[in-house]
Amino acid sequence: MERAVGYRLTDYPAGVHVGMPSTTVTLVIPLDEPLTLSGAVIGGPRPFGSVVAGLATAPTWIHHDGFQHGVQLALRPGAARLLFGCPAGEVAETSYELADVMGPCARVLRDRLHEIDSWEGRFVAIEEVLTALVGTRRASPAPEPEVLEAWRLIGVSGGAAPIRAVADRVGWSPRRLQSRFGAELGVTPKAAAMVRRFERSVPHVAAGRSSLADVALRCGWSDHAHMDRDWRALAGTAPSRWRSDDVLRDTGSR
Image (tube, rainbow, N blue to C red; front, side):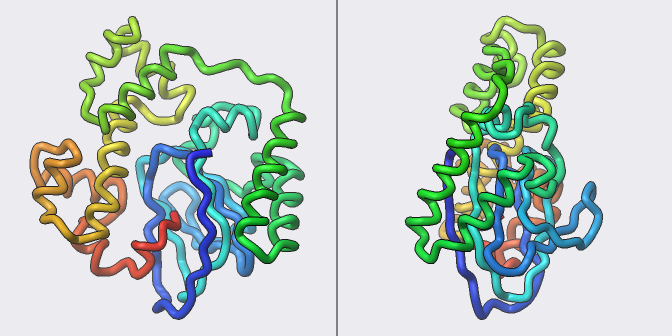
């Protein structure tokens, strides 16, 4: 697990929060009302009791009334095989009810979290439930090591590594890398690099301490215009507009 965040947000203006693409598989378990989501693939708006979202190249819209309460988990893509019995590519590009992917354990997890009042206790419960689930799963084939190494190279480079160079490093042709990488993760290597650059830029844009041109260069774009194009594709809005309009931008919730 990359990260677990508990959140209780109150007294915000009602609106729509941008669920950003990221390089993790995201689980969100609301502790009060269901999440109301919409998106290019899922349609909506429609409610989700708990949700899992894989890697994506477009935003998910989270419709809220100014109050949000729940737990969000960011998982490495390889965890999908352990928890769901399938590669991360099978949950990519959209959002699913967690029970449809995880099975009855999703209800167990949600019930456990509702029974516990402290964040510390909730995080312990999450670890216990997910560890128990892994123990019941039938062994799933491991991802090809070339895919794992390509993913690592894209990640450590911040999305800056040329994809042809990545293919050369793992000993595959670019075409084979694209095919096998996409089957495992649900996005192409080029898209994964774009999302990695974007992901790096989000906290800098939210903080507003640097110019957008400086953020673009720091995060691997050639210029502000290039960053702006990727932001419009991945977040559905320009970075300056997101910073001014999304009242939940600093909460860490997807």
